[in-house]
Figure (spheres, rainbow, N blue to C red):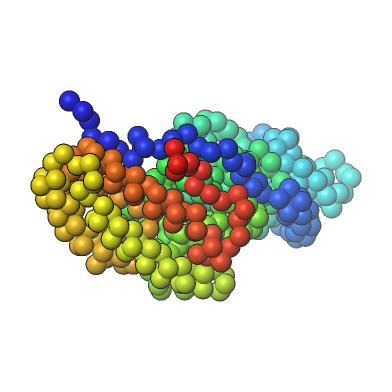
Length: 379
């Protein structure tokens, strides 16, 4: 018995393509240099042991105490932090100089840093736990990855920066072929609202704040190839959230820049129109000219048409209806057309979605030279 074709069966090998546009190394170096200046100013502020409470991350043999911005202390080891971060190393040397040269002046120096305790705890677990905490074979929540990336950038922890950016590239792809093979859209419910999420084997983007935070972080590191997909997620956000922002787990409100809000508002209309046209084209393509069961496939087309007409009413207001949605899964519901018509239909869908993908940066007013579907549609 012949199995029903799927869209994955129709995707030929990818075309040769440029490597992703990695974050600008000069930009990252500037971030680290600026962070050291800020960290030095923070460390110069006097802190007494009575000014903080101990965290669960407290080693009796630790020889440095980091005090988070919310008054939680972490007694850790200078050597471990300095091994991972030149910024920490220089910061500790400066703090020791502030204490003085007497051996008993600072037996366990206290260093204040402007980092919330919850985020600092994540960083300590990543540095101390390594692969036992951030595992290769398990996805990381973006709500964990984002603060880790911020701190990795702030303190110049290169291996952690590379790790988080690599995970982000698995969902914020610049080629459709890569996206089809490594990631998928999900439906997420946040504060009672349904919006589009993303997940891969390496990362899960699962809240409205995640979508906004992703745009801001990608802009911060200057990796333009990830920006269109991050903005695309934001187009599914409720208007009030898109304009006013969303709240992170630590209570901080994150917002898009005014320019990115305008980009998303304009792209919402453009993408809704493209979605409508895509659905119109899908339902006009069967039966195909070589269909052996025209009557049956006509009935299947009518069923698909009814299903898609219902979906079209939700364009722009439902996370299940968006331009890059996996319509091939919806098309494959019973009753199905014959294999020949199904294969033709999926080819039409793939071609249409690739066209939408290729123009995505332009829909947001962006220029991303490396952006393309990566699929040879003539194959």
